[in-house]
Picture 1 (cartoon, rainbow, N blue to C red):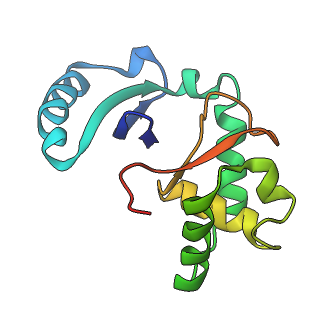
Picture 2 (tube, rainbow, N blue to C red; picture 1 turned 180 degrees about the vertical axis):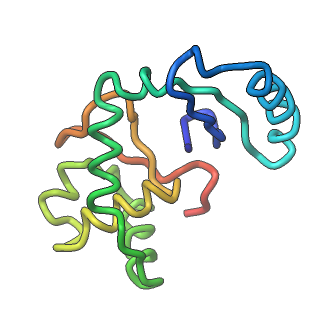
Length: 135
């Protein structure tokens, strides 16, 4: 997962009852080891993910982001983000053409494009090129 603070590796457990000694040991190990590779570690409960818009946002990304992008499509999106602020509404209204939504969703799944997953995707949702990816 790419967040405003960087890349995170998430381990997802169904609920707090699923967190056992083995999970605690793994959490300690990964929390210490992952920063060397540019990631932080977070244990997330599935019940928390199901709350609010996260699940709807994830379903949107998965529904439209299945197809890979060509190098030309990827570069076209990158160039758009170099010069302007892009919103979800811009994408839905065709700023990238008919495949724009699929391209943005794919790049979001890859961690190249980010947005605040805690709020529902709307026309006003700003999209960002991930800070860890060169423009």
